[in-house]
Length: 438
Image (cartoon, rainbow, N blue to C red; front, side):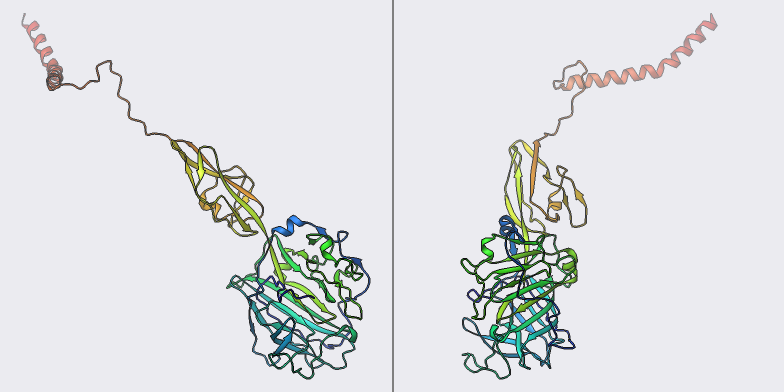
C-alpha cells in the first residue's frame, strides 16, 4: 500500500490488540484468502454513491494518534523505513510467538478503539523466520511485514526479522476484533450509519470481514467512483471474490502493485457487528500498512421561521448520525409573539419519545432529538395579544366622573330608603290598632 505522506486514515480511535494462540502459526490459510480469481472491483460489485461518500465524516485523525502498549515483554521497539525512518513498536511473529495476550491503545480527543487480535497466521516459505506486526508512533495503522532497524537512521537491521516480500511467497494474515467507543466511555459507540473504511487498496493487501450478516458483498460496499477503484492503464487490478467475500490487490513477481490514490471502499456496519466488534482479517503479501478507519454519516439540520419572525441563532448545522442538534433561537416581528417549533419529519428523542412531523416541539426537545436524517425545524409566530381592560357595566347613566355633592346625595338617599323599609312593620301595626278603637 502506498502511504501518502505517511497518512493513511485509521478512522477510529483506540486499539487493543490481542493475538489469540494458535496451535500452529504456520497452518494453512484458514481464512481461504487466495490472491487469484474473482471479479474486477467496480460498479458490478460495489455501489457507486458519491453523494453518500461525501456525507461520511472520519471519526479519527491519524496524524495525531496516542498509542500506549500493554505491559508485555512481547512488545519490542525498533525503527521502520517508509518515506523516512520511524519509531516502530512491533511483535515478532514466528513459531514461538503469536502475540497472544498483547494489547495496545490508540486514541484521540473524542474516540477510542479496542482491537483484539484473534490470530496471526503465516503462510508460505517462512523457514522459521520472524515477521513483524505493529504500530508506527503517532499513526493509527497496522503495519505488517516490515524489516526492523535498531537505529533512528534505519541503517542497522535487527537479526531474526525479515521483510515480507512477494518473491518469497510469504503471506501474513492478521485477524482482529475491533470495537469503537467514545473516549471515556466503556459503552460501544453505535449509530445507524456507521461505516468501516477499506482505504488505499493496493500493495498486495487483502481484506475479509467475518461477521455473520456483514460479510463483504455488493449490497454493503460503497465507493465514490468506479474509476477510482483501479489504477488507470495497469493490467494489475483490485479484485473482489464473491464466493469468499474478500478483496485483494493483484501483484506480480516484479513487485508491481495495482496502485492508485483514491481506491477506497466503505462498508456499512450492522448494529450487531458494532456491538460484537468488527471481526476482520488484514492480509499482507508485501510489507504494507492498513488503516483501522471508522466513518459516520453526517446529516443537515436547518432552522427557519415563518414570515412573522426571524432566526437569530444558527440557521444550519451538520450533525453526525446518532448525535443531537445544538438548537437555535428566533425573534418575532413587531406585533407578534413566538408560539412553537415544528419538525418537517418524524423525530425521536433520546428517551424514545416520537414527535410527529408538524407537531409542536419545544426548544429543549430539539436538543434531545436523535438525528438519523436531514431535518428542518420551523419557528411559528402569532399576532401579539394585548391585555383586555375590564368593561364598565352599561347602566344608561353617564360614566363621567361624579362630583362630591352627587355622591353625598346618593348616599343619603340610599340611607333614607333603607330606614323607611325598616319602619314599615311598625307603621302597619299602628294602623290596625286605630281601626279597632273606632
